[in-house]
Length: 448
Image 1 (cartoon, rainbow, N blue to C red):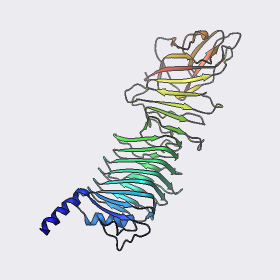
Image 2: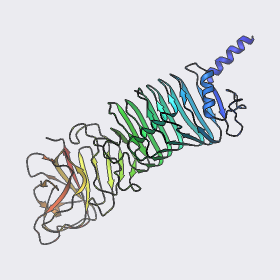
Image 3: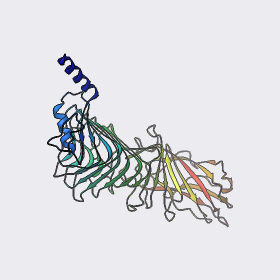
Image 4: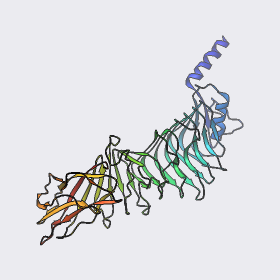
């Protein structure tokens, strides 16, 4: 009978999983026991390693419950091949990691393994990386990690290289990473430092539900197909990448509702400067207090033609710069507001996103309620290309909008880099545009 009861209990334990507790006050790594909440460990590493050592079944759920307190991780916790480890913070918990040497991690996920970190109460994860080739989590092939925390922070030493919060192992193909946090802080200062450093075919999602801050959220040194990086932040203050094209992600999908502002980093472009690196999935709002606006939107073929895009980027900025109010690009269009008077026989300043390597096929112009037209005619075109439509009466611009076709039979190619939209006036006696705002939308196509 005793044998039957023992067999039943073992089966029951396998069903509900195995656990250990960590307690910063009453814990002891020498006397801690698994499956015994009254015998907690004092370090996360000791509790995790005890569970992984004692229970080697691949299907056994293993959970470390972390009681309130601050817990440093000083040695790498290895999650073996095809094993799964869960950490659950109960109460107010802070996990700290200081990389002790080069080539170190707090967690190393081997092939097929999984790490889950969750909380009930409040969880902060603070990673300080002052050594090269080190990160909080390194992910192997076919491995998976899911992290949910209240606050996640990374600080990379100013002279370190290849440092991150999460990074793929050299063989880390086809892995998955999901990080969901309320607040995020990323302090980096050089190329190859990033919150997410990812080179291989995998899927990584970083979601910040409140506010994130910092530069170089994503970095990719090697470009693969199926390298899917996703980002959402309710309000990100900083930049996606660094200040040179190589310092950023190769392809980043920014999710609907994301707001990005470089207000604390005015010398750096919010979306980075890596060409073809950004794909908006929904409406992405960007505040940029500097010029120029670098074209980093991904185009699988020249121009904006293609079904790969399902969103737009709406820009805003400070009034002293060349674009006024806001402008946006979406699908096969570039749309921009222009505000202010234009004298006769003159031009507007260039406005809207910088464009190149595309064609303009037509325009659509719509008056805002504040618009006051003058007398005379205008043409539409670009700074470098000049007027490309036939002149039309400025008074014909209505709240409903009008279509303005090109003067020639073919689409107009933008052959010079960093061109912008422009309004051209004819030789009239007074201001052609007196005051207010019009929205100019150019229908774009692929290059000829």
